[in-house]
Image 1 (spheres, helix red, strand yellow):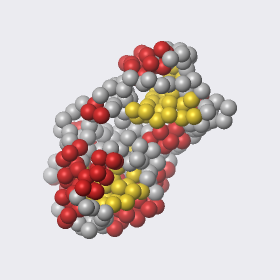
Image 2 (image 1 turned 30 degrees about the vertical axis):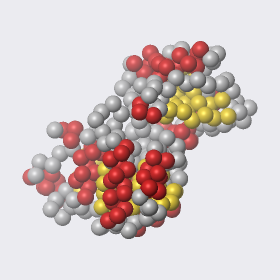
Image 3 (image 1 turned 90 degrees about the horizontal axis):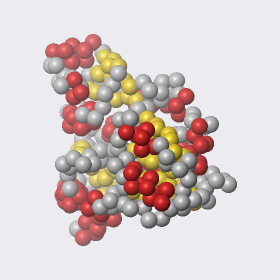
Length: 323
């Protein structure tokens, strides 16, 4: 059985209860780059982890390979979770994987998740369909089939537009909006790593957003929200006011994490990761660390126990950013 599960946009508590239950009973998990790997700590000790992450504009696993790996894994394990960032039914390449399952005679089900647009908007205090301001909301993407570039044919006043995977498409997006009559003063918000403690936001207008982003390091994964609703985030930005927002902490221990303690810190706005070291560590997370830490930097490292510090120093186990 293959369970397609939405992991949500980043905050590990934004995953559905059903999704967590499926992870707890999974024999194998095939997960994406945009999945918060803290979710893998829900899995049982003998669950196999398989990484199939794609990084834009870099050599990555092809969709056909993922389809093949999905079927191969399902032939060997009774319960397989295909864990996708956000909601698998929204820009998640879901239909292609369902077709592969169907052609192979594999049973499947789908558990939706919170998509990046609603997660990012909620963590900025923005209602995508604010009464009296936006009569509709459109989800669109900067990339089409075979990485063809979107030309944004229909962008209307009086709506909110949420652009997925759109940083590289920003020039085309802005030009299309202006050409279709949108005001140069229309507000636009770009949020990188939305709902994580490492969330970074950049707000501007159609007139100045390209200049602003050229002066920053914001890149994908980022959600772009265009529309008058963006102004609400200037009043209701509760997430940025959390006491530990902006703090990034790497815990190093010889033991598995206390998830309740980590989640409590995440609720305060911190970005955290737990790395297990030593001979008795869970070796499945060696590969998880390899992928995750390659894109992360932590301002603070905390050794949970003395043995972890000794192991870290003796084995020269260092986060990848120090290599």
